Length: 156
Image 1: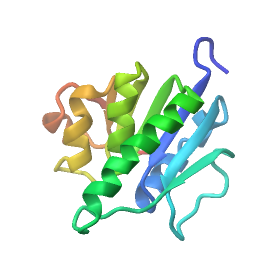
Image 2 (image 1 turned 30 degrees about the vertical axis):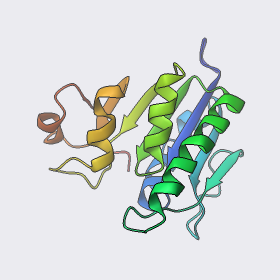
Image 3 (image 1 turned 135 degrees about the vertical axis):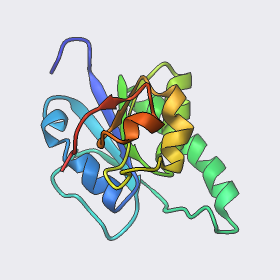
């Protein structure tokens, strides 16, 4: 464990975002951590023993708004209980409340733009870009879209 960092929250939607964040296994193994992701059939077995599962949401569902508000309260509950030093996320929808609430609580936010985003920013990336303490892209062309970002190379 590195000096000063006690705990990391890894946050990712299910599917590709979860697959990407699971590639940070080396970092996960160095710290106390927990994972927040959506309930789904997609599962990563070897990444963070402690997990929080939240319902999947779709912005086009009629019930989206109340579920999204509920997610902010659930986020606050998880972050107050766990007290992470950092939130590392690859997006998407589930990540936004964690970035917003995390910043309000003084937690450092690291956002890794999706590997699939080669030339155009994601909606979540655009929303959290200015609130992130570190914003990483995986493709050099994305540095033009996010000038204050850092090129991290591909996670895969």
